[in-house]
Image 1: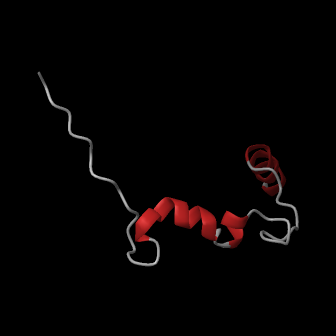
Image 2: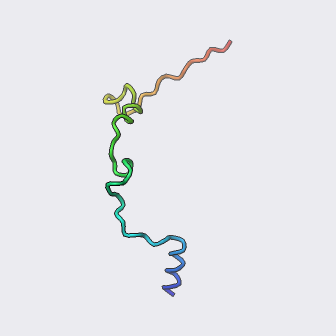
Image 3: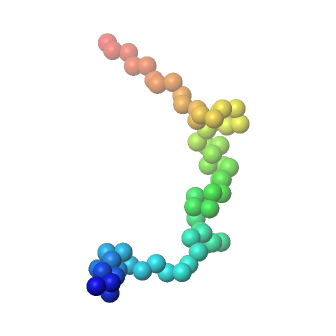
Length: 64
């Protein structure tokens, strides 16, 4: 019974290999490395000032 269930589970979820989840080749986002130029671009003039990214005011359209 256990063997049959294990085969069914392995068909749905392949067996996990014994590899570390994070290593030197992992992407920066997975490791938690901050890319300072990217953050500066995202936060604009709020970089180093606020925890919220800068959002310019919405353009005003005049209807004629």
